[in-house]
Image (cartoon, rainbow, N blue to C red; front, side, top):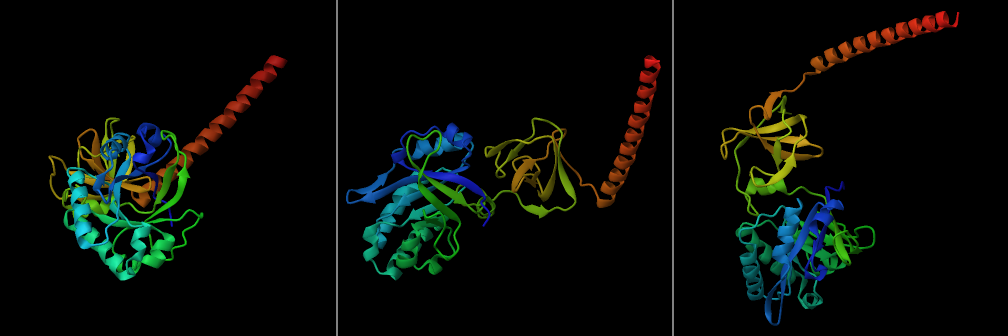
Length: 328
């Protein structure tokens, strides 16, 4: 599978993180622990909010996870209810994962543990979050019916240099001993194979609104005419991706009316799809070059190059004659 993005996952055990340094090291997303539970009740990671804020401020995409000990429906409800309260008001670009790996859960029948994990994810889904589950290969193969959970994103851990799990998965935690600038000590390293943003925008999950109604567009480009052109991860003026370089970009769809006061387009930049607003003199819609236009330009360029070559040759002859005259 092609890697979509590289990232890390963190908790209080990483301490204070310099997120600007992490982003500068090439990490594109972070999965942040919300908390866990114990005999004393549900525990909220004291670094959760600052890690979310720091990663977002550094321009990284963010998701979340919580470590579960739940062996009953009541315990599932207690955990999820507490974590939902902490998630309130956030916008996440990656799922909220249920981390199911604790040894205490291995004594539950496989079908029962699978049902409880699905129950937790169904609650998250009903409350407006895109849920997923995390575990390591042997736990997935032995203690879960992953086929019954196939509708949910799966984040698998396997540190052998390959994934031994034979089913499908969306993220791979490939190391627990990674070193990344901005973090003092080991940190988990992850690959993501999926862009979750289109699904989040389509469904309105994870704090994303439904957005504008889009109609497919063919044969159009987004012409960037100003260095002040902004582009976005979603149709939200606060979800800024950065400044778009001057040039033209293939447009895939356009809003059928104004949304937040603007006409929006989706376009391709690199290997990803982004959003932009149309603003006169800054970002405008234009016809994409037709194949015959490209051929005409190619021919004109060839003629121009031939003329330049002839002129250079003639100039060379003149210089040779001048040098010969000076030598005489």
